[in-house]
Image (cartoon, rainbow, N blue to C red; front, side, top):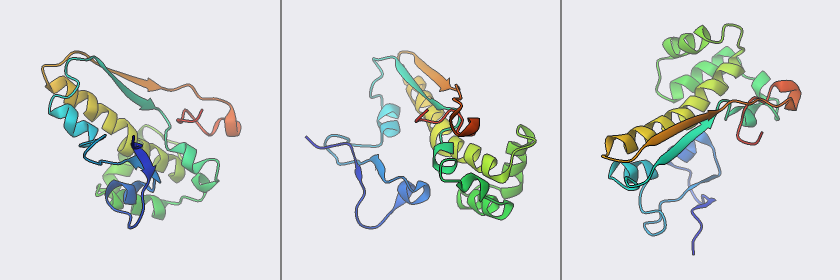
Length: 158
């Protein structure tokens, strides 16, 4: 039996190039024949209830323990937003409006959390709901431990 998650080898392409995650689901045509959201949109799992969600601060795990969160400046933040193809000023202003005292690293963590975790979870629930399917439930895990003086937030490894 193959593993669904494995280290990508060779050139880095697609989503893995943008998010730098070394472990990703690998569409192999057998165990995982298509992207899960595409399968869901095509009706896979429509006879089951679905639970999907994420943690509030998913990406902080990659920035806080390494100290990178404090190294992010406005220029880096702007370049990151541009790399995702988003309007720079509007995107940053939108995130800053609800995080008035946030440093650039905090804004980047929130933006990347939404981009790779929160919005895909919403899209998965929407894909399930668009089928004449059973219920789609969503969660957001928000408990923040005191780890790293409370700066780690509610990330996946808390």
